[in-house]
Length: 438
Image 1 (cartoon, one colour):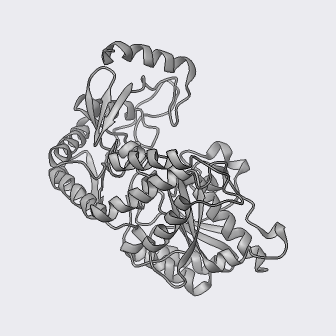
Image 2 (cartoon, rainbow, N blue to C red):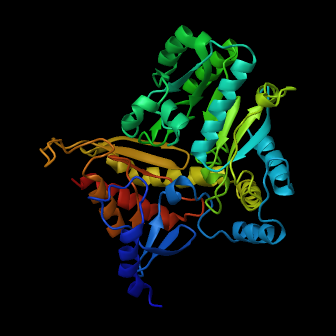
Image 3 (cartoon, one colour):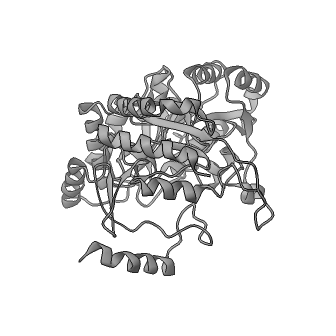
């Protein structure tokens, strides 16, 4: 079939039956009709090819259609497709757990246990439940509060929404969310808040080094070290949400390791399987695991998913970890980010550009908000995640052959590790062009 012939039909069928994530169907344009992908490139139904500069929403670590991952999925599917993981085990889950624990940031106490789930939000839910229930099991019934950083985002399920900021996404659910304390994103500010409330904390949760959905806000290693030191001294578990930052995105296999920090709970997803299968994991210390071991069955962690430790997903993740080591993915992403940042360096003097920044393979800058103008709804056009500029920014990038999805007026790229130099340069050129889109 001619790809272009099916483009309009596919979009029309989509419009009749689908509900897309983070999409305002009343105003957003038609979705891209994607018919194929290879490496860093997406093929559209109309025949165009565009560079996937956001790694399929930060998931596609090695590139689309990586043969070794697809082969791993096929081989595992021929042996064992799935089995209920409550009361059963299998080689891919055990081997992946062993590999994750060996690769995780080293600390005292070390991470020794892996709980598998389905996506990043559920990995965070598991961590929150573990921390809360473990405190209760130890008799620390006063430790019922979580502390998170201002501007945080940890997922879209109810516990994850609670530890994330209410704005811009979760305000409609405020009556259903539990209260969480917030600390500034700086060492002194965090320490001041922590010292006032640490005796009430079940855990502290952070996105190490980069707060992704907040607009690629970046902070230095000193903040993470301050958080870890305070938590260790006070006996408060530290949850590191590395759903986005894990597996090389920051230039190290884990952002925590870049800061020399080891958490008590580590949440991973996205790059875990490089988008070739859905899978997530929560790593925990032995002390937290032991809090659930008891003669009473009700002391168990009563949490699970139908697809927990899916054998095909585990096999893919195991192969992805091997690729990370063999290809030195963290170093490759560091080089990709550095090249894009160098190409964008002239923007540092641009009147519409603020705070050009980079962490590993993640490069971002902010657009200055234009003078607010009245909108038909009575609001104001301008900055923020829901800016009316967003569709125009995405459209302009696509005209230049690059898929970007700005976070409001935060323009960013985090391409896959297979992105070559010419593709890096095209990504940088498209980002630079957005500086003049109003």
